[in-house]
Length: 427
Ligand code: HAM
Image 1 (cartoon, helix red, strand yellow):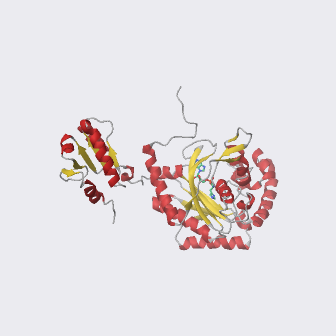
Image 2: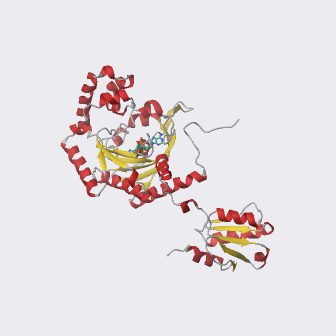
Image 3: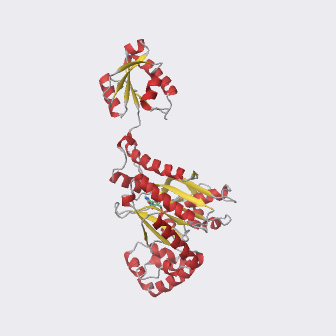
């Protein structure tokens, strides 16, 4: 019997991971340069946490969570997203009391959706959350940062920023009244899900993927038309500052996001390069969430980047530099008869040249086949250890990419020579 991974869950083998590491390194670099710190929290939480935050009548909680009973009867779920766990962790660890936070996390999330290209049941996000800032400066910082990330990745030309505001709480309750009035007039055209949501959580009808419902919604009132002055002014300010910075965006009044915790600004970066799974990064403000999860009032705003989709884009556009796949600088080729001497020379070298990536040819083989491996490793230099080298306590240094003479180097001076070839010390 051969075991297979679960549907919608997959392995990432070393060759695929290079493009992941490229994408992640660019994003982490940018997070560092904006002063964000890492936070880590569990993959499993009490199911109620997600019900209270993401929302009981969202698709995620109603249909997509991996929930089960723990052996002691507790109801627990694999996290379908990171914001809820991050807020819970911040409250529990006292991170929101009289202070602000700029945080990020990364890791797997789980949603039992129908798998397809760019949509998995286990998928990876890098999520970013900031707490204690009333905005809109931090909202803009987040959007600037996402824009800078896509620029650093070389994806600016294929992504579009969509933004909208879903208003402050009182704007939203007025809007919900007008939406309900409109939908009640069309109740006979609604499907069962939407009829149920009309009573429980009418805003979620806007997320429906049913084309008949979307037709009914095409004439529904829009939130943006019903904003109070404050929310309107703030939204205008965000839009005009984005324009000043030269960031193109589309105001998309239908963008409401499929999670309940948002208020005011919401945004999504989409692409036309990946078919129907077009959102690669999404987020917004969620000022009520900390209180809703038992903390004292504290503003929140954040976003998450979907890594599968970003990596698919990076691979499609071939933006990952070729030398990014190389993980070896020096390859040590060793005659089988002297391997136990060679491996000691190499260990000594590793301790003297930290930072240099050295691969030892474990497993023996002819010198010819070892040289082929050295070449395939992408290393710049091969060090060859045979009988003669052992007797003279030296190694033969061969340049694999440059037209330079092979030389015999005493092991005592080898670290210095490698240092000058690779500028390990840097300048
Ligand atoms: P979300 O829109 O549900 O937001 O997910 C963010 C991103 O994760 C999506 O834009 C998409 O790229 C990716 N994603 C979602 N589901 C899948 C899937 N099944 N397969 C592959 N990629 C997927 C959130 O999760 C919020 N927590 C974001 C946030 C943080 N808002 C405020 N702070």
